[in-house]
Image (cartoon, rainbow, N blue to C red):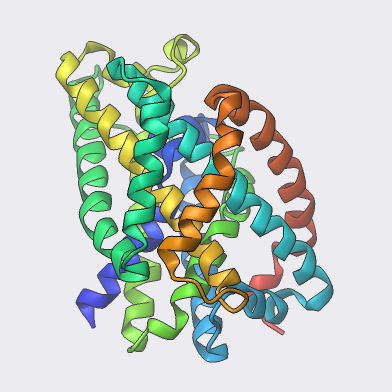
Length: 335
């Protein structure tokens, strides 16, 4: 039970820790100053929402997220969320593939080499379907978290004044609601895909509480570290590199590789959500459907990573926020 619970915990955590989170961009965008309570609130909300979604997926014996959405939101609103999730998963997968190419350009490798490598590895991964994804997550996600936490703790200890929490003004607490809600789309897709795989209720507790504690703890340390370099963040496209600016170049090299793995696991989790959504419509094996998906997304990567992030993410943000306002509270009271 414990081993399986940890496996689902790492899958859920890996879904959340994408390139935006690992690079510090999402942390700084949503939190920043006066956000200790906001991060703690996010951690609690993430546990509750994940628990409700996973338990509902188990009770409904759901094979994809559509059934779960209908139970949570009703059929009318579920249709809107379904379309948004499909769009979200497709577009963010394309952005992640492009990001894989852009990241390897740091090592003076061609943009198309990184894209091709990302696509090939994704297709190979889904030869083993969910087992392949969880096996990769069991290795990559802990490595990413451990390296990130170690770097942040060392940075805090070596900084003037050491680690400290400001418990004064906490005016940014509403950001916890937005951050949680905007990250529920991929979480719903992934949790709905594993509901039938859960064998013991203890796995649910381990997966949801464990992932919430990890994400809350890492977010808190990360945010406090970014506050120390706030004046320099405008100079760096990736906030993490502002923290690493005084470290040896080999460490920047290692973290760039880890950022690439975060991009890869995010793309893989998105594809898992798409496969679970459409597997009743197509009888082809997972690796073949993955090949079709990544091939269809390759033309999208010609726009470049920065352009895709700037245009599509802002568009998705607007669409998500509208639906978040309509349905955020509903997961707490299934119907």
